View 1 (spheres, rainbow, N blue to C red):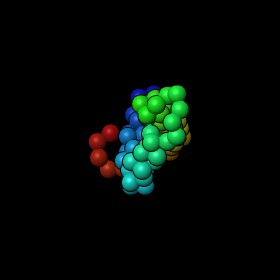
View 2 (view 1 turned 60 degrees about the horizontal axis):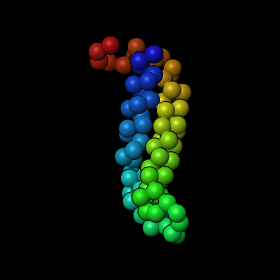
View 3 (view 1 turned 90 degrees about the horizontal axis):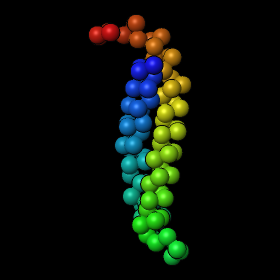
View 4 (view 1 turned 45 degrees about the horizontal axis):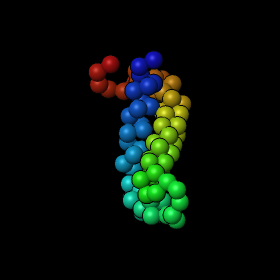
Length: 83
């Protein structure tokens, strides 16, 4: 079970620095944090955005990694390198 979880964790870490998301993230966060005034304030909006983005990355890339783990296990014997 360690293999699929490690693969999912690695995919999620790489997804955080993908070119599309990495370039757009500062603009998106500044738009959310500097949004209309409400009861939460800028820090509350920033924490909400952080929690939402983290949950989204965990769900999307975790599911992607777990879905591809069986394929990676089938391809591994044919790949060069240590096993």
